[in-house]
Image 1 (cartoon, rainbow, N blue to C red):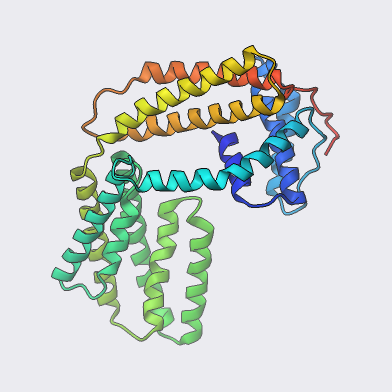
Image 2 (tube, one colour; image 1 turned 60 degrees about the horizontal axis):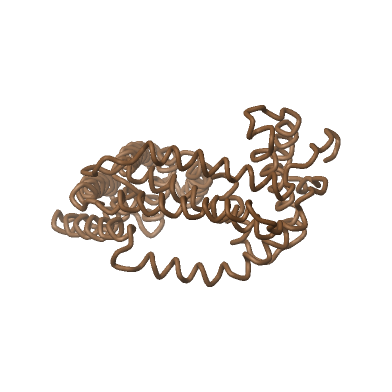
Length: 350
């Protein structure tokens, strides 16, 4: 799944540049390590793994992208990537249209969001809250791919907002001393939000909440008690009605998506095995391997999404597990056939 996500990210980044070509080469080496003969037989290639960890550390650093040595499969893989880039725009449009269709598995989630946000907004207005959009934003933040993840996000949002309100209450005496103190606190919490929100959602919410309240305060002095009370009330309204909508609007299509993903994975594996059985080119093997990898990722996503929903029929867990095992065996055979698993790079080749 990590390899597939990395390939999709590079494809979405646009036209290839020298830096992106280096990242593509690193990705080829990672795929070689994960799908080569040693991994297929259950033996860890410690030299390759150590080299990949060193490259990963250098890639995350501030310096240039590490210059990996050429891979045996680099040329055919690069050609396959160019082909994928040409066809990706057309496939993206089709995927978008399917996602907006009335029978899309994403429609129940969209309906949950619509119902939950509408209820939260109406409830906040009915209770006389000055800023009902806070309740709408809180409800929208609750909705995830299934009810289980939505419940977890609701807990994180509630905890983060309540702690953030306490942080705002602590700095109220400071910001009332002058504009410089208000600006300093605003910059501090803005930095905290940017630094924390991608690492831990509830910690990021602790910084986002006082930042939002400080922005309101920047437009004019308001009673601190009123701001704090409105924020707490909006948080509780948004979380409660968001969860109510997530439970009330069931997603019975999640199990059907698993069935379709199983069929798609079986079809992609059969196509790859037919290609393996004949004198196929490296480009054809690479294309089949990528389709199979995408099908396996979609199967895992579909299974995880359906497993977190309530009021579902029993999922075919054994079938999913067997399909994943068979698919990864075929992926390994495809990589070996096109010569992806070449000799390991030397330790000093960075």
